[in-house]
Image (cartoon, rainbow, N blue to C red; front, side, top):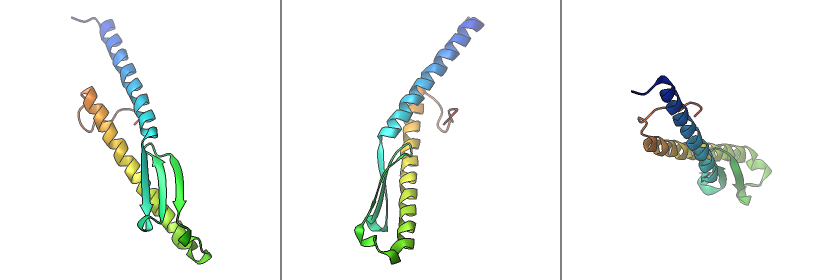
Length: 112
């Protein structure tokens, strides 16, 4: 039979292991790159799976004053596409790490 102190130490060790894995996951997500597009590729946004924006590309054919509103709409759509892709990659990576820790599917780790 484990003593209360042994159980507390085991829980603290498990929490430290989870925290280390979460830190590694955050670094991994920041290294994974996704690309959002709109306008058939006229506007592209590169982002990390963590959601950090890495770059924006706008086709020069859109660089006309009368196209301003359309360009703004396309940039917004490309950002949203990149965000959606980043979220999908992030969710998949979280499922992978939770499966590796034996946590039930859908279990939300604190801080995520």
